[in-house]
Image 1 (spheres, rainbow, N blue to C red):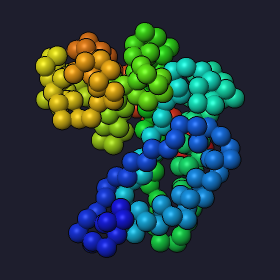
Image 2: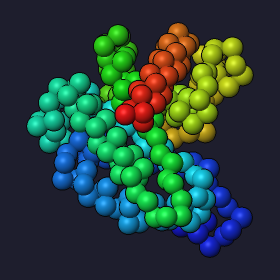
Image 3: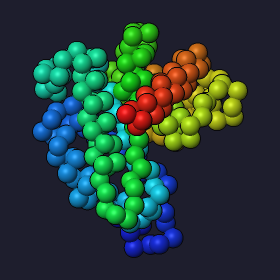
Image 4: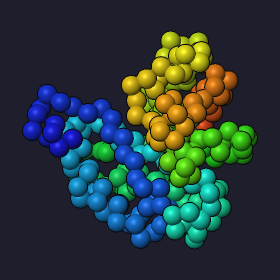
Length: 225
């Protein structure tokens, strides 16, 4: 964005924003970012492209309760609800902001809600969504789910297994990470941490679409109130 500020040929259709997970979950840091959004980010984004959409990533509550000084944020579902409320407050602040020249478009990519869905439906796979060495960053499997949620949010379409965009074999899954950085590659041999299986990929694509559809319906209902 800063580089494109002085280059009128570079326009951003989407700006994806990812906050430290605990920040939107806490009232004090939540209010600080609301102020920063209005004073700094919104003017920067709309000056580049008034029609750009801000996508806030609702990050996932940690795998282990209480780590990283998160004891006060409660259980997985309680922590996730607080994060969700914080992200919703960012969107509300931007939508209520009126500078008399443009309306700021913003929406949430419900990644954390998708993680919570897996938590409630397939606990063993939910554990696999996290980096096994720190238990809060996403693993390759969690990163795949996050990518699917972002895709469904931005393009409002599902990722069925038949599309050319989706991996359908173990080889195609491995190819997704061929040129990508993988966390802690030396701790589990040259191939790094475990990748999702074919069945897990299909399951996570369906979860992403279902959760995004529910989010769209929820957002639509709230906007009518």
